[in-house]
Length: 470
Image (tube, rainbow, N blue to C red; front, side, top):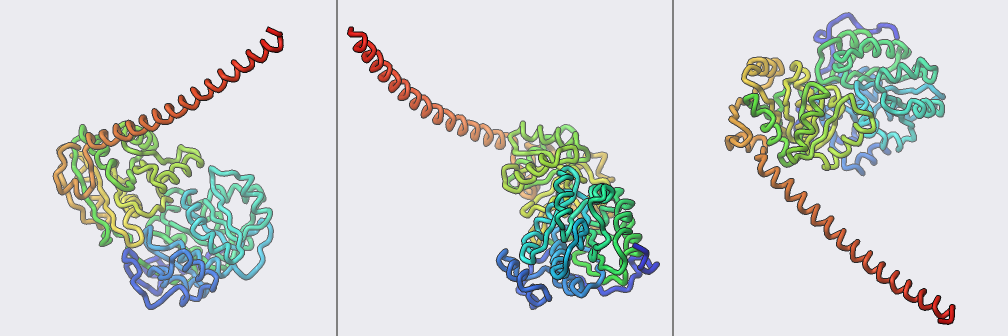
């Protein structure tokens, strides 16, 4: 697609700005989804799902998106962006015909988890309008995706690499795309996706609608805006800075020997916790250490198969796993409500990663806590990172997992390892008791069966004797 934007930087683009705090849950707003111009079927489905009051970014963005304007949206994770771009996309494409292999709408995401969650969020409303959606991402069957495209798909939710591979196989063309959307665009450029993204967007015909949503406006975002968006309307909700009123930030300074037990004590807290580490090996190692300590923990990283990642996320959402140990890349698409604590065991690479980590909590108006562990020599680095992120973090000195000051224990919900191990032993004892009860029942059943068989054997022996004339 040819360049059709101005040469101004993002900061100088003439746009309409709408600011609000998405962290505040909707409070009986004057505007409802029914007032935004969405189809009646979508409004009814939203109401059935208990979604009546739009979040600020939804109320601001949806009318402009329905009007066909290019959108430059900025808002942190959990501010309601998916419905902001997804519902207008579906409403616009409701009228029209989709040819085989030629989708009319494309949503690009940086990770397969995010692609799946975007599709899950939008699928119920696509069903209402009779639109077919398909996720195209790595780690899943390409044959299945190609088959769906051959039958006709209205909206593709895709990661750039897999979509490019399918196009190169001749199984998909973007020549009929009317609406192209980039979700988490800052991560697209930061993770090295930019060449693939531009290659795909260049295949989208000029004149269509473009929407770009991002938590920050750094990296190569200006390149994408200038090249692909025409006179975009800018909607900013909830600054990417980490000073959301429902989120508190804390740094715990620990000695090297105390880092592992402090991690376990915090991970053993009640509720869901995401723990961030730098490497895949670190994620596996810490998850194993936590399980050995009696914590229900599992790892999530790019070295796992898609099936394993999907099962792990499902276990985390359902509460079978309380602590998820994740790498930055794997966690980009984690949109799980009810995460009230993020624990940074390893420092974030930069302030952008810190903000994305933090965005896993305090979602949709809920409160949350972000805790970072710092070894003595890391204090200066971590506080500089906090300053760059616009975060005011409280500092606490921690003597060890068994010596939390009351304030820190209250902040983190940390439990002593002795308490965790006691719970684990108690649960194991209960499980053993259940197994004993089950085995006792099975033993009684087998004893009854043995008696019945013995009686049958005696009857048959007597019958055989009679037949012989004994």
